[in-house]
Length: 316
View (cartoon, rainbow, N blue to C red):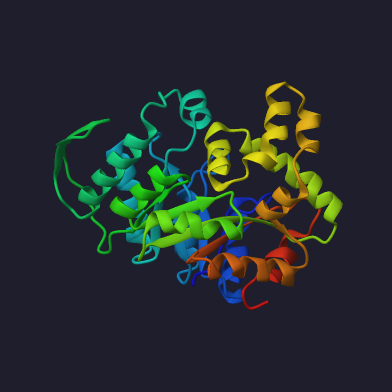
């Protein structure tokens, strides 16, 4: 089992990350994973890590399938795979209409088909083949990587419900899952199928101040679980009855009532909290239920981030 953490760390300039990243390897972390939302892009922090810390495995969770053209995405993945041979994993996914359409001015059309087509294209391009093909959502004419990596990176697909989970199982090397509890993992993993990597981004808040944790975590839960794809995901997982009051209040514009309506049970399932020892034990439950690489996303509000990174380490 791997044991990863999300980078870059909040509030720490990228130029100051070297000492943090070197310590990750010393502490026993195996992986460093990035996201790509409105902060750093997904590749730059990993390129720095590849140069500074040759022992860590690197991954993106995730790069949107829309925001780079197919050839550029293949070039970016190939360059990082070349910089970290055998240690880079490319995670891609649909992202969201906010990121793709509102922020980048790209139509968020056919997200399932676009992700499937990008995976198919990457399989060909990263193996060194010349790609001249019509996919359903784009066309590529005569592209071949000029710098093919010796070790093509595995490609994982971010997935929530059965359609994308099946895509991850059929066409990719595994799935990246997000915003779920440890007890939800078996249902999700069953849809992917055997023999695949399962990376789970797990929100952890290492604090025993339960009131503060739940206050902060409720805002996070509301921000995500009112997005239609995440709402549908949790309905599929069986949380619909627990979340219906929150969804109704949110749709009515009553944000305060929506936050208050989120049950403690949901908060505690989705944002792990407590002492460092308790958090580590809860992360192990994800692994026991089928996650091959848990990746911590540390909520740093009101805590010492450096102490948290050290206390949550697998050797801690």
